[in-house]
Length: 235
Ligand SMILES: Nc1ncnc2c1ncn2[C@@H]1O[C@H](COP(=O)(O)OP(=O)(O)O)[C@@H](O)[C@H]1O
Ligand SMILES: [Mg+2]
Image (tube, rainbow, N blue to C red):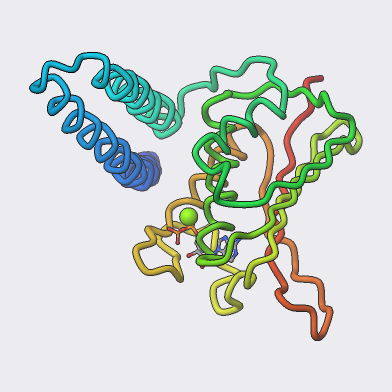
């Protein structure tokens, strides 16, 4: 009896994880599908006018975002199923560049990597996705202002420590203790799934992610938010 109850509990937990990640997959796919359908619409008009040259970049965009859609499903559902991570040696700067691919203009970026060529063993797509969550949140929280986002990376006792700090309004105190829980959001239109996914990704890499206490500096405006990610080094 005891075993059956344990098994049921385990199944329930797995379903919670799958549900949580599937909701995030749906949310992200919707954005990608919007881009694909807008590009298809424009390409279609170009083709109807007999202007294949004008259609070409839109077709390329459709191809790119179709690949992105596949990656979202493959990477995230792999994580949801608890499959072993497909990790490989990567450069931290590369994962961060991918994470910023669509955010380049949305923030002022300031990086300190010590040393510059920090390597780790990670799933490249998932690692980039984790940083994307942090960057996107900083940008959302600061809107309509364009924030400065500082990324500091260093090695501490063989672990890679990365801090992402913005100069936005900071995390609302009422939810600060729970922001890594699914469905916790203080943002209109938010899902509250970004940081719970980020935490799952960090944990799948035997790492951790935390929100640092805002520095108590009276009068400092704006206070901003700082997240700290810790990952195993490349060994
Ligand atoms: N950099 C940040 N600055 C201020 N608030 C933040 C920041 N990052 C996260 N938050 C807060 O944490 C909440 C949860 O974030 P997240 O899990 O990504 O869900 P969502 O972005 O859908 O709300 C956000 O709604 C926001 O209130
Ligand atoms: Mg978010």
